Amino acid sequence: MEIIVLLIGISLMVGLGFLFAFIWSVKNNQYEDTYTPSIRILFEDNGITQSRKRSE
Image (cartoon, rainbow, N blue to C red; front, side):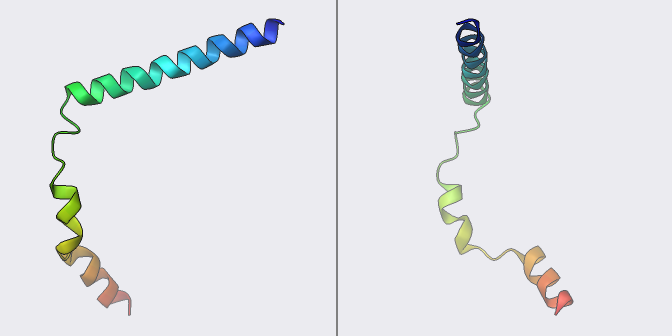
């Protein structure tokens, strides 16, 4: 029975940690730009292409 209380306490601490991280990321505008990630694949990344050409 003691292990259940311990596991519930640990799971509550982990859950509160994730909640705190989510609230922190929202307050720091981490989710503000929703447009750029959807079009990022359309642009060519020169750094990756040049490194592939050198390795070939």
